[in-house]
Image 1 (tube, chains in turn purple, yellow):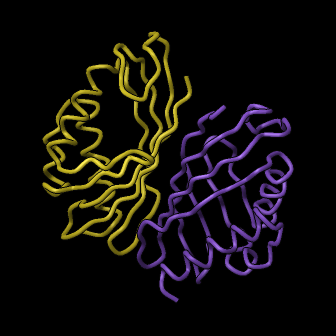
Image 2 (cartoon, chains in turn yellow, red):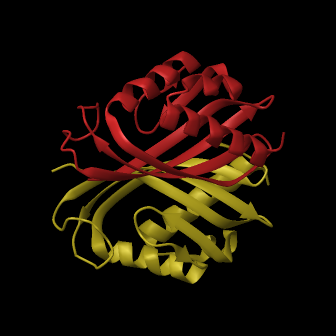
Length: 131
Length: 129
């Protein structure tokens, strides 16, 4: 599988996880010890922790729409742009999101793969309150 | 030059430019037609535009401190993260009014190279005021 095909598979797995709560595809393409460095929240270490992060987000927000865009990649590294819109429904310690507000996120994700699975990812971006 | 060496050279050039005002350091590592995609805004094209951007922003920064870090890379690509702290002394596009208080930022860069030079960069940053 080339790097762009992998990216498209990953994007579909993220859609399944965030929008349907189906983590089966994500489990196949993430290393068990995957590390996500997502600013500004603490590192998420391990596939199970990433699943829990997504589950938490699904409980905290509503009206989620998001889009990944493949930017570029080669070998075992790739970059995706990410844009999302949602409404914050609940408060949770460690998640700096204003309850009741609509948010737009613009993020850049960089991924490193090992043995055909995501092993490490870095993300940074902006949160904009849109209402 | 391997990707780590390229990444470290790019960190050197960024540090020279931002910390010392030596924007010509970019000549060592960027092509003349380098493209910057500063997400989610419009791209900036050309090394001269990049030099001017850094020169303009440096005028509005005081007490700048940078902590760049090479993340990893392979083939033609590498990633760099960077933490920074500074005080704003002038109004800048996309930034809050200058209060003189220290702000901190976290940035992420993903770079494509060709013949040992950076030809394309995707970047994004978040700031805490």
